[in-house]
Amino acid sequence: MPTKRAEYAVLGAVIRQERENFGLSQRALARKTGRTETSIGKIEAGYQRVDLVELLDIARALRVELTQIVATFEEETRKSG
Image (cartoon, rainbow, N blue to C red; front, top):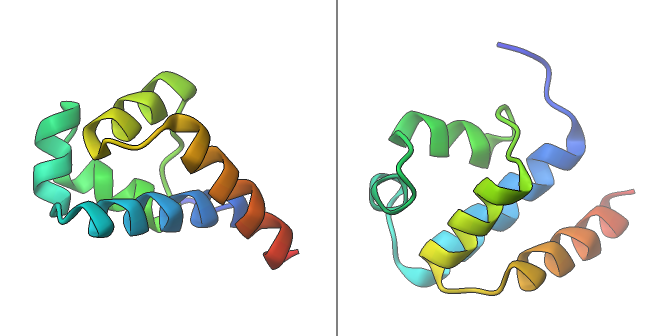
């Protein structure tokens, strides 16, 4: 498995937290976004990159604003270094 960048791990953690806050399983989020459960797991673990359009799909599936995900990501990356 490829080495992950710390920022992707942070983004994945933000997505995971939003998914859990919304009460969805990885499988349910995968269905809502047209991805596989494995893909969602890799995104949340920081091993799979997400482009902006895919991130928008995830945000919409979670009923959060894309800007909220980005703001939380920026805040968390500042904390981690």
